[in-house]
Length: 432
Image 1: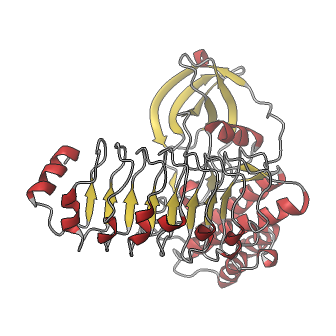
Image 2 (image 1 turned 45 degrees about the vertical axis):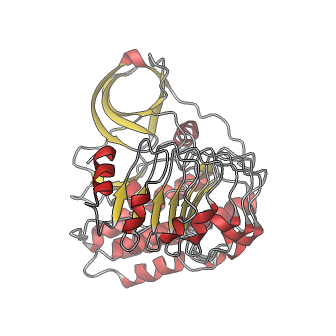
Image 3 (image 1 turned 120 degrees about the vertical axis):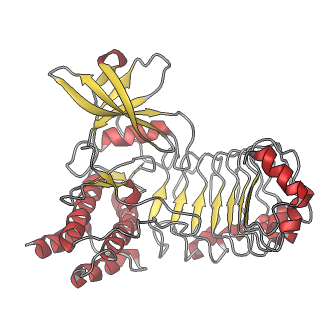
């Protein structure tokens, strides 16, 4: 049903007992009939409307866990949200929010999306939410984060891109569970030289079928009439909008700066002279039978990928995938880059051989020199360990020494995590 049909059914009382309710596009007020679902409603979508506030008695929705309000003109995060006892996920992207009152933060907040707003300051209470696991803050005006985040023991993913941070918080590299970080587009990100890459005229491309789509752009099959010979490539056309990870321009720069490696998708050139001014990259085209290793996180899994329950891996396959990912990340760190999104849903693989490549540079950031960069690289070692651990969960007889190494990569003390060279060496030993 579309919004008008759902709204009519709600008002007739036809939705009694509903656990989910989706009323996007055009609401000017929260229908009072929503409160008739207070004893069952868990997921509510009010996105892309004209809401500027929520009812004072919104806390009556005592079973509500997930609320989406992105695209509404909220001047502040509604304080009444803190009165919802079960609320754990909030999505308020692109709302123009300037203020985040401490009382707006539910006690059990786990996942907060405030991407693309106008927030300059956050309350200390945000870092004190004990269940906070995933925090999306890209595209705001934040110049500093509260020191209370130093105690955010469960925080696993944070997006800070395109803010006004002059320095990265000292606690960033010390959080025990942090694995995925993005901070590109802040003054704190080290400057990097533009990558030297071929500029490919639009006229030299014959664009074919769409192969996929992500938050930052669409990928097409294309034939490139190159300087030496024609070749088939993947063409990524960027949407040009702020994503939860950051700006597409930063993704392109990072992908080009990464250079070539067998375990990376690899950029071949930058698109030039598109008739509508669209930016794009030419990437290596993988064989059509390669597939994504897992799906992205769900509402329930929060920061962890969702695998096909039927997926089973032989130990040799798991080892090869693990080695490819570890090699790719090691290469990136050597090039001064943090990938920021090392996940199975960004890993493409060949089920016949176990060959794999790491893709998607939307969350990539330039690493600082010295100790600062080494600390952030150890954060990403945890992401590699999580991925290896997930691969081993899909093996009937996983190599226990590799399981122990994955656990070492995930240990709470970042300084105690092994270097990725040691991970690769252990995989090589097991493969021999």
